[in-house]
Image (tube, rainbow, N blue to C red; front, side):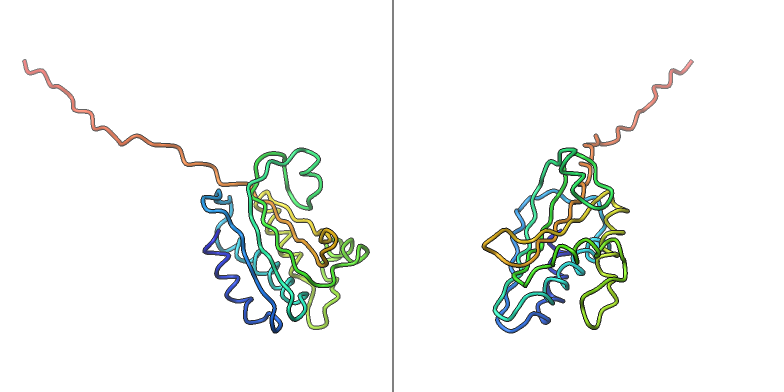
Length: 178
């Protein structure tokens, strides 16, 4: 995940307004996710692009990741194909004006809905469909007061640990002569 995030960050940094900062907090040794780098890059790229467009000059975008255990109630709080159990949660929080609740309700219900002048409104639809295909989910929350902005949360199941495989042992047959 860190390599994919670094690539997405590189693309976004140039588009940040003057004085805006992008920071990440990804713990070392965090589980890998059950998603290839390409789709994960698409998800992170769209979320970072949205945050970069929302953040004002001097604002900030913060990306964090952690391992979480979702209860059945937690899983129902996400749009997508989320089931209870362990997930890697990635959050992208911006310090922009935030998304009004009536707009947030329409973002996933109407795939072409957008409040942005030059956009087609497909970024979040792509994020949603990609996460659905990988048993993940997304939700958008307002930042907790006194903060402003939006927190985009995605959850993706961790990749299954690879079983330890013993080295192959060649069997030799004893041939009895006779």
